[in-house]
Length: 88
Length: 506
Image (tube, rainbow over the protein chains, first blue to last red):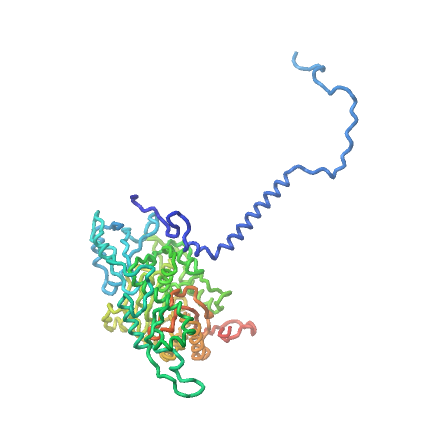
């Protein structure tokens, strides 16, 4: 038996579920709290979704893109043939 | 399981010696603090008390925490606890309905006999018809026939009962509930709802929306069932009604039922009841000048003066930084307190023979006068009155009731003269309306309404039976309203928008 009693609230039953008295004490605030909760969650969800959309890829479909340039058939620029000016 | 009181022998002996004569039956039992971590401020020893079962509101068991006999004890006191426990449980919870005449309890059988001798049958045949002027068909007879559904004698014969059944049906359920509640009080069960909590820390806020939020925020034991809720609110309604009107978090506001004049009076009182923090502490440096206590004059006190003092202390626990002086005044203020007779002698020091109880924890003092209020007022016994400190409370005064209104005739102008708020309650709406119209007619335009009448949020949830008339059920403090003498103040002229009618028509 512990020296000091572990404080127990009589408003919760043996399995720590809220009792009838606690439910009645909370009742004037249940609906208002639920609506407030919905508002808060909705605000958070709104901020989240707006942010994800805002940082997403830009849509350039309305910008007129010029045609791709006509390529001559020479090989692409390589570094193998040029001389390097390093310490020799 | 019995817990051991941890207290030294010197303090134990002093505690047993110091219970004064006037409060032997009303021993202030220190309630166990709920959280052992908060240090008690003015107590040297922190003792957890043994739980005394079956505390009934009428006969308060005079078990103090220190009479267990275990002084330095390591012994658990099972013998004493078993002695205090009733030897058998009289009634099981499903066996609470009994006819009053054949009740297992002798007190209820006595009440049934009283009803048979005093209550009259309500059948219209016993009354003369109002239009004709002819005599009644039958002479008035006492009730004897009991209704089988509610167990209470309501008519003089089975024929009248069957005739009047429709009107009886309206209250039959209520009477049955009263029957079961009465037997429940005598059933010998353990009453956890009558264990009242002590004071809380200063910062704890009380929620005065309804009974459930109040009991929760004041840390009462959870009352899950309805029947214990009815039993406990029947007693607590008296202090809590007063507290709910005076508290700054009161549910009655200008949008609700309070009038501007009421707000002025109550603001003055709340200035005293909720003083700003002054840095006071328990040591010498923490000494601060304290204002005088708030005086509550409870006029026409009958049963409320015999309530257990732990119930009245709940009022002072609602206001942690102020002190109270409750003054019960009335010819019947000692009803139910027979063990305190004989009354003190009238000496020059105590000219009206008041009984003073001041060992109630330091925040409350209770005085009782068996006297009419007008006598004390004419003797200027309580003068001067201060609207910041004084208020009058009238619990179901019957101001307009034909049997008692003549007793209030002299008192009313004196109450109006003090300019202190008068908080009144009533048994029913009809009762309150009668009181209000009586005050309105008798005041001569000198009274202002402070709070409009209406249902009291903290009314007793239990209905009571009037033994002299079983059809008359009432609940304590059903409604509450307030008035005050008109104050004529010099003020700048602001045009004609303020009317001086006093708020009676709103």
